[in-house]
Length: 455
Image (cartoon, rainbow, N blue to C red):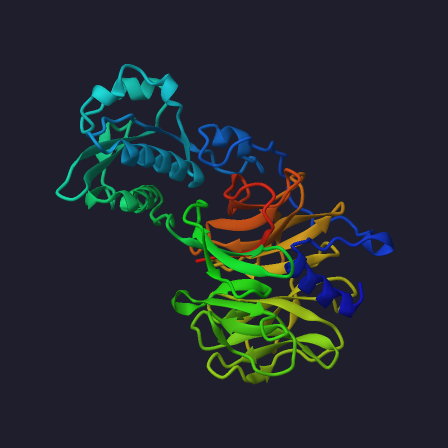
């Protein structure tokens, strides 16, 4: 692949929502990075709120991966007039626990007796032990002054004791606040068990291709709910990243040339063509890929003026898709200086360049995570798979024999990745745990969405 083809491929992939797949002699790539393979999975017939989500989607990567803890959600009695809220409580609670990657939610059909008639504060321990539950969740719903009052409880069945959980009580909850209240409780469960809170309620940002040339930017909750359009200007808007304070950084053709914007404010005002960009963790700098001297280089921009304050690369090759390290000291990026795309690192001032991926011949789209790992996409047998690499170059495979997978981005806590997959023959947004073991779809089949980001 020539240096111009690398830039053209990346830019057109965003506009057309097509993964770059080479054809002819250039497509004859050696095997992708060597790592433990993942088993294939079957596509579910329903979305991630299906009760058979775990059985249809889970992916086993290797024997070292942790098993899921069986958890039971006891049926509960609903107060008059709150049936809609009660159904949402049950649905969101089951879905959150499943998506967490820590639990296997037990089928209520196997429960003994009638749990809904029991006191939610005094479980019948033997009944729950006999159905294989390690943990038990009970829910109490009562009328509040201006909504419903919720009382959640978490129990350790083997220890026969209650576990203190943040977010276990919510009062006067209106119907529109039910989802938020359940998210808070599940985040508390995860913190009580792992020592680190969950991130339900966090937001995923992505682009969506509309008819013609237009692309809008949309945001949604990590579970796929609450989807909304955040940038719509009748132009092609690409490579969205969350900006400090909740704004959106992106590249747009609104002015005729691809330029950098934050929300409705144009950052760059020159005649160069910009590709992807990202804010530094402290918000003081923007690293961007821009056309300079006939190839794509990386530069630092002033977020207020859009002026180029430092040129980080200056070679005859293309450097694209930059990503900051969590401490803002390093930048991961893709370069084709070896003839094929590989992942590189350099200091935030452009010094200390070194190649990070030494295996595979077509590695792209690096994204630094909160723990210092870099996720990337690598071609293998003419499809794209996802991998992580540490600072020593050790590579771990996350997907295999599950269609093409691309555009990885980390969750705020580094325990999840969001990515694109066409494993059912059509692109969808997926979530997976950091080890690749559990993977779930969160959007419908065949939507032309791409390049997700997470905060």
